[in-house]
Amino acid sequence: MKFLSPPTLALALTLGAFLAASMSATTARAADTLYADLGGKQGVATIVEDATANFLADPRIKDTLSESNMDRFKAKLTEQICALGSGPCTYTGHTMAATHRGLHLKNSDFNALIEDLQDALDKSNVPFAAQNRLLALLAPMQKDVVTR
Amino acid sequence: MANRALMFPLALILAVAVSLTQASTAFAKEKPRPRDWADSARLLATSGVSQIEGAAGGGLAPWAVITGYGTRDSLGGNVHGTYVRLPDFSLRSGGIALGLFNRLELSYTRQTFDTTETGPKLGLPSNYTFNQDIYGAKLRVIGDLVYGQDSLLPQISVGVQYKKNNRTALVRALGATSDHGTDFYVSATKLFLAQSLLVNATVRETKANQFGLLGFGGDKKNSYSTEFEGSVALLLSRNLAVGAEYRTKPDNLSFAKEDDAYDIFAAWFINKNLSATLAYVHLGAIARQSKQRGVYISLQAGF
Image (cartoon, rainbow over all chains, first blue to last red; front, side, top):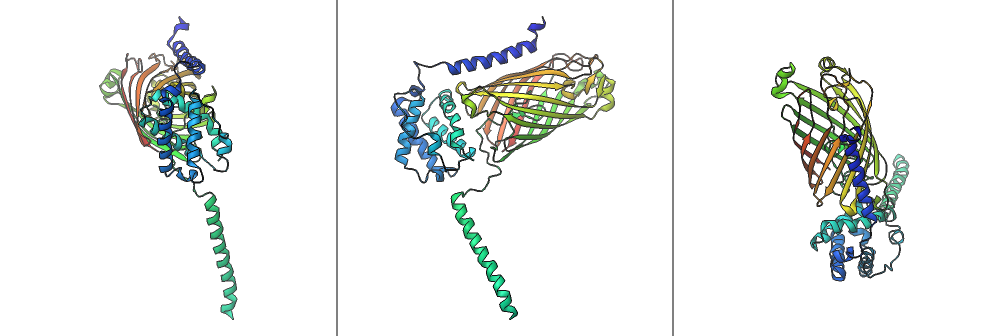
């Protein structure tokens, strides 16, 4: 009786949700890649083009890109998103720590970039769930990108 | 003579001032950005909403998040107003919360529990109200809700809520031991971003009867109880989250049994300055009036 009490059930449900989410987090999605959900080669290219335009138009972060070679930036970002999404690419750029060294980026810069990327993903009609799968892969890069 | 004597120090001061200005300009070229004290730069919805006692969280449970949208370099804050309409009572609350550097949250909330037409059934006038002041503090200890996607570690915070009820004599007459009390809690909040799912678990040490609206401790039990509060929320878009919560409560008073509370909710984050939460909340029996369930509406404005 006591074991089936509402608090026990609530605790079990919360733990269950936690476990289910952590298990599905580690399950590979072989058939349905994130790369495919992003629209494949053309889709990722469009997303990167739109996102980069957003970065350069965003007063919060545009100055942090003033020294960058934008053609290379877009090429490497395309590779990186393709690779993260299990697409047929290998990221050949420098590490995140190396490319952001000396930029003195803050969490506000990192998050502004995420928001600009979300706008680009919206523009390409990428489903919200797929957007979050991409953001979940990018989010841990904060510790290499943000240095102050 | 006197003029010339004065000229040297003045010129020196001027020269130093000019060079300092130039130096600071040069310095500013390297790090051109002054601190933004209200950067509102955390991602939408990661502030949570204002729970019933004024802490950032869901509706019933505090979460490990710090109120507002300030990053670790900035401040955030919120004011909120909440109204819960139950069959025999109503509950209003309003408060203010400040987030400092995404680390510390300070809050003040005033709750008003209105007996409406039910007052006479309890030997009280109609629309008799109990007020409670709640002073809260919450410290983020470890973990990051958003960035920690490569680890299972949740964001974890510890918090305290000091509550003071204004109906000292009455709550004592109902069997409560005290008109004030302090709750201590630990909240662990995990965002499974790839699944668009947020899970929260809070453990609270409390002596509060009906959140403290009927005092603290009682004739049936007068020691701290360990209570559990769980929340699950699914993110449907950047602006919309839906979910459910469950909160266990002590049962300290012999005059009226106290039940657990639960709700289902939808929170609409219009932008970083405004959110609206609509819920259907079940608070069980309150002061012998059974099945107290109804609509919960909350508005929050901040940065």
